[in-house]
Length: 161
Image 1 (tube, rainbow, N blue to C red):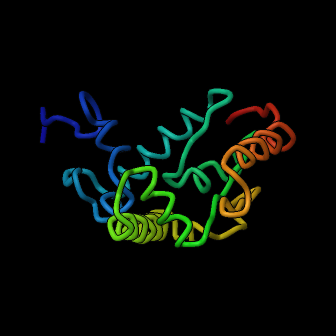
Image 2 (image 1 turned 90 degrees about the horizontal axis):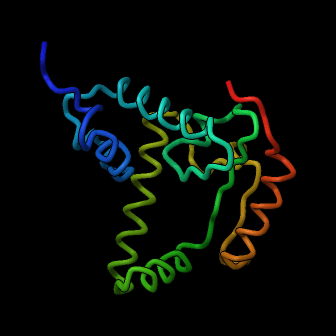
């Protein structure tokens, strides 16, 4: 309607867009007035805008698909066995094993639904990434060093579209 507030702009719009969990985004929660097409085009625009700045780290939200052919982008998939991820989340968030298990499994389902709904991909498909690291086999510090080296060697400074 004319004069109606644009839910993607103004105070809180960006926070709402990026602050939703994968499951909320896949279910369309929080932005009932926004079509899936509008959500995806806005998300794509934001991620590409962020990527146009050098030395930026973007976590998730389909960025491995949105920036698939982006010069200089390096895509990394971090994996670990379910039990390892549950223990990590329990320790980091101060949760019981049961609470952490629910959070991890809900997150996994939401992430899978989000990527399937908006990008028609399996988020864990290794062909979407330059590198896959198992954080149960390398420490987070080691992973950060490896990623930094790969980013320097593979990413370089590309011309952005």
